[in-house]
Length: 147
View 1 (cartoon, rainbow, N blue to C red):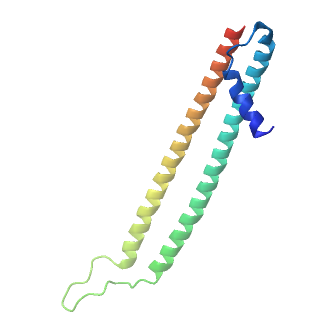
View 2 (cartoon, one colour):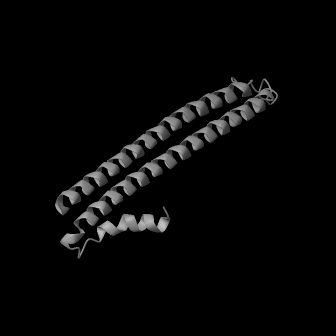
View 3 (tube, helix red, strand yellow):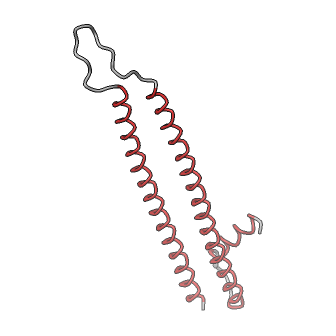
């Protein structure tokens, strides 16, 4: 179905002004087309969003793993102790300990960020399901009034 016909099938039922009683079957058919077009459209939007979010999540996991690997390589080249000035006490922590703490913190932040992103996605999905139900109810209401 072409885009132009899809748009016409979507908008035309909303312009019922001036129909006669002879058009009753035509109206029912147009409302059925409107309903199926909307359901198909909403399903396609959900599927596209699901695919896009899965791809983003996969890409982020790869990127984060590469970042952690780069930091591990950097930490492996750090000295065992911080250089100190003559007469000054040695630092209580080593550079590798600092990098390990930073890495732990980043992994915790990543875990929470992924949980929040998943929660947001679920919220959006629930909203879309509600929109789908509202459209279905509205079409049923119009169909009942048309009869």
